[in-house]
Amino acid sequence: MQPKVVALLLVFVGLALCQPAPPTQPNLYPIWDSGIETVWLNDISFATEISFQTYGQSNWSAYVYGDRRIRTVYLHEHDWFVGATPNENWHLPFIDIHTFQNGSDVWGVGPVNALYARNRTAVSGFQFEIAVVSTKLIPDNPRGRIFVEQPLGFEGTFYSVRLAGFDGSSAMGGHAYFAGFFPSNESTTTLNFGVRRGWFNNSLFDGNQSWNISNAAWSSTPGTDDAILYNNAQLVTYSSEFKPILIHAWNITGYPANTTFLVVVDPYTNFANLITGNFNPAVPLNKTEYHYVPVFGSHQFGRIVSAVAWQDLLFVGVSVDGQGTGWIDVLNIANLTKRAYILLPTNYSDPRALVLDWFDPTTPTLYVGPNGGWALLKIDINTLTIVGYQNLPYYLHRTWRGMTTPNHTYFITNEQNAKVYRLRKDDFCRTPCMENGYCEHGRCVCNQYTVQKGPKCEWKEIVIEKHIAHRDKGGEIALGIFFAIAVIAAAAGWYMVWKNRRGYQAVN
Image: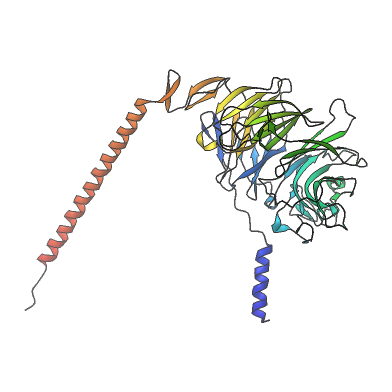
């Protein structure tokens, strides 16, 4: 092969393996409209995750992720904005990512997509690396990230992660659950779907610890740290939007201390499955025989699209096709038996964002952000009834995920032009507000362009008349200016013609 050809091939390989430099990320600030503060994300499409990074009395931060981009959201109670990514090396193609905080350092964990897949196999076709990123300055890796070459030490393709028990001072150590496909052992080619538990090496929290790729970030024991849900499963290519949901709970009243309950919601089979375990790494994971199928009454089937837990309760958002009526099933998390259900209003067919308010345990609240609905809902967990509505502007109808702080509730949208928006918790009304109106401190008001006439918000006539007059007046002025310019140009042109004709001399 010619040297020039070899050099050209090496250039192409280098370009394929190198990551593009992340774009500059300026601060993005919200605009207010009808009770909602919204930030347009200028470099993130189809946002899929928002969750806490750091906690504080009045100084919070979170990350929002989508389209291979992460940005930090600074959640001040008064003025808030969206800043840049924690550092440039967080720009990775995560399928799922969750963070935990240790002191002032923030760590992110999750599988990255096929761009970074290694070691193609006969079982699953490829493996995803489990990427660990950090804001921590690591002596041997100043770029602040590490890849685990073998995912959890054995073959597998994982799509979802749920962190639990991460505490640098804990003797039990932090661990995480990963859902995906893997063989029951290394000698078989039978592919199974289930969960693998990985234990994080807490010595990596040590400020003097050199962390490089030779350090074992995770440890996992086959047989003890895996639970197979479906044997001989069919490989499903999940994505950042279509993937298993993992819910983790522990120390539920009536069960032994440190007992863990992991609910695995599989959108492909539309089942919710239960796995029990313990914070003790010697206690193996155990798949129970409990599973749940979303059925309303005796005939209407739905699709599971969201799930959250509150103490011993599991809330499951169920979507139906078209403009049907979705609902929320309330289950006992320890055995997945149905306790009750919450039927949503007509045309609320997709309760995609279920957000629990952890900051007021005396009056627990569940917020519902529908994907395609025109209002947010507020549900009292004690009574399991809808107690509040807040209208949404038309550009916020693709709500996907959310979270709360002491005074506000935040949501993200999943669309080409993704957004982060927030509203105050007391801006909900007992009944839906009228069209072109919104709720402010518990009462319905009309937006700034309308006035209330009876039960309706109607456009202000004076606003319309002034707008028309201003438009017409502006048009008249513009036409006058253009006419004057045309007259001056014509005069100048005729003058030049006249001048040229005076200076013209015939040639004999």
